[in-house]
Amino acid sequence: MWQVYIKELIELLRDKKTLFFIVALPMVIFPVLFGLMGFLGAKAAVSEQEKVIRYLLINESAAPEFANNLFYHNDFKPVELKLETEAEIIEAIKADKLDLVIVLNKDFKSQFDNSETSVWKAYFNGANLIGGIKFKMQDALASFNEDLQKQILSKMGFDPAQFEAFKQPVDIEQFDTADERESFGEKIGGLIPYILIPLCLTGAMYPAIDLGAGEKERGTIETLLLTPISRFSLVIGKFLCITTTAIMTALITIFSMVFWSYIVGQMLDVKVVSEILASVGFLDYGLIVLLLVPVSAIFAATLLAISIYASSYKEAQNYMGPLSILVIFPVIVGMTPGVSLNLTWSLVPIANVSLAIKELLKGTIDYSLLIPIFASTGFFALISILFCVHWFNKESVLFR
Image (tube, rainbow, N blue to C red; front, side):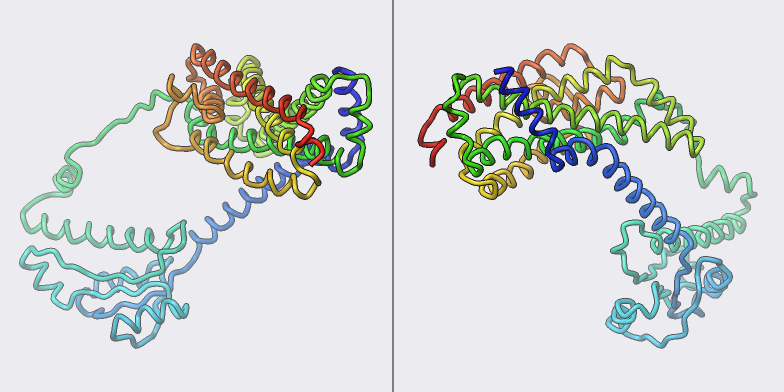
């Protein structure tokens, strides 16, 4: 068994494709991709904040003070267009002739004097996730509403101090009991297993294809079966080799994330990042790796069984494609708001590991729940291995 394991591992390490997925992908490419995504996201946010909104006011004479405030606002620029119907307004926005149209109520003055709420209409394209137009319009309107409130209360004899108390009768002094590590873990803790677990699958997938369908395609499976090694030892040796590559991918990814986060924190003088990473102890990092072992075993055994069944490299890839999609669903549980690790979730494979990694990064895990997590994932790993061994012993599968 160990001879098979060492032989297959050495051959895989000689394969440039395997080395790419085990080393290059988690160590270099993913940090670059995430860094690029962060840079582009930040650039888009800054660009949206600096964007000058082209606007048009209809019935401008109904509220000249608001029109004047908007005209001298740095974030707004008036556009000269003649639009009358709602269809024309929508068409002009879709044609990118302007960004915002506000239709003022003609009866605003009389409604204001009679203490009635005046309803205005605003048209804009809200498809942008950042929502810069909407927020800037709301800020401008909030400022105008505050001026109107001051006018009303001034007529009623309220001074500025009374106005502030009237506007906000109760203020809350907030004390957040969550430390920086817990807040950090809650925000990105669900993202880490979303990266690690699929990477374990990817790290196991290509070696599994090579050690199963690849053997068939190369015609070496018959030669391997003629050696004086039991089929049980052959399949376990291959299984251990695939599991090793999956775990190595996870280990390198964890090291890469900690290393690059620390480097970026030092370069940008963001000490809080380094402090949070340092607050996650070696025990927690070790537990994250241990949690990935039975998950990697499940992936390795399942993928090897699929690869043994497939008659060619391409057929194995076709079978394994849907598995990548299925794995994502339990992993997403860790990113779902309001879902936390409990006894029920600790029994659900993959989802339990995703939630446990999140809790470990937050520093709020109940260590007693690790027992049912390891028990349930270990049980499913054992079932997967036994099925793989059974599958490998079927002649109709090996030589289909």
